Image (cartoon, rainbow, N blue to C red):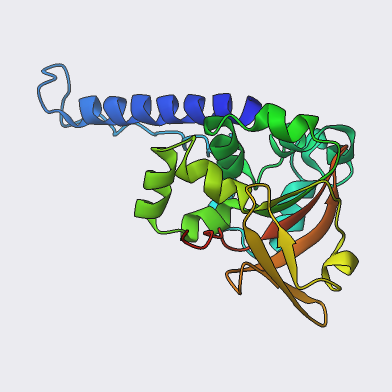
Length: 223
């Protein structure tokens, strides 16, 4: 997918820059003199936007910041642009869902999500993944067809496109993997997963899904 290729390219670039920096710091270059001015280095492209000074999506956590990042990203990933594509494809253009897209790709769920007639997705943002215990994320990524699929499936409700208004009138939902997802509402605040996550940006539409951005990655109950 597009975001996956972008992430791999960014990692390769970062490694290349690190090697170059190590070479420059090596005092073995006999042609260098004390009178030579230090080279001026250009800032490395930021992974979030491939432009110097771009904000790391892992640090964008509040509603206003998320909406601004989404609306200033690629046209296909804006709130209006996502309506044209099925959910996995639409998410791949969204600048705050890069880690989720990588995880969905690793779990081989892209076609499953894109071909669904109707689906509700509680989508953890990059900020949500950044807050996840690294050991938990590593364990999930190491088991793409097992633990990773179970975790991702806990964020998906198949067969329904549920709006925030719909969520305010239910107490629980059956997820893609058959687990029960608790839902609680208090005024405009919707929490899911037994209080594990809160909906930050609700009611994003894609061609086949309603997406709600959430602030934490939810872990399904054991057993």
